[in-house]
Length: 138
Image 1 (cartoon, rainbow, N blue to C red):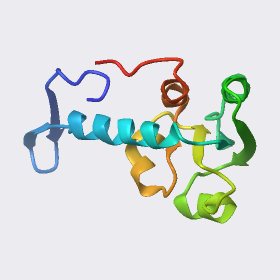
Image 2: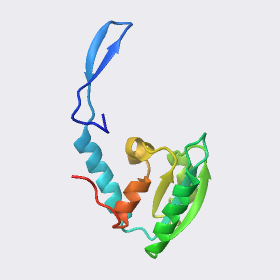
Image 3: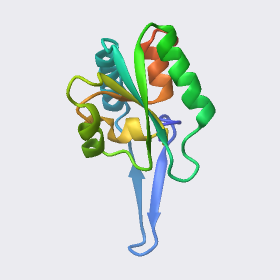
């Protein structure tokens, strides 16, 4: 539904034998993600998370993210986590240690759960938008 918001999505439940139409509030999601990116634009220090659960983390993308942050004169530190929860990140830097997080783990983590974190939690594409290297599609 996120990748193809104009396609109709149907769900069949074989137990109740019902067919229902599913939906996703794209304008709300985009608004929330744009707000997180805008908040992260002010960040001076980024925490960069490499996911270690299964095959989610990509070391090459992780290195690329770190390089892009540093190329813009910002600081970053690295964290390896098997699972990313708000309480884990709060323990590591919700004071002044970190201004925003970038996760290289599950691509949907920021989209689906980012609003539960106190600091912006961006994915790699959103970081590029934050740093002025890309634009959100219209």
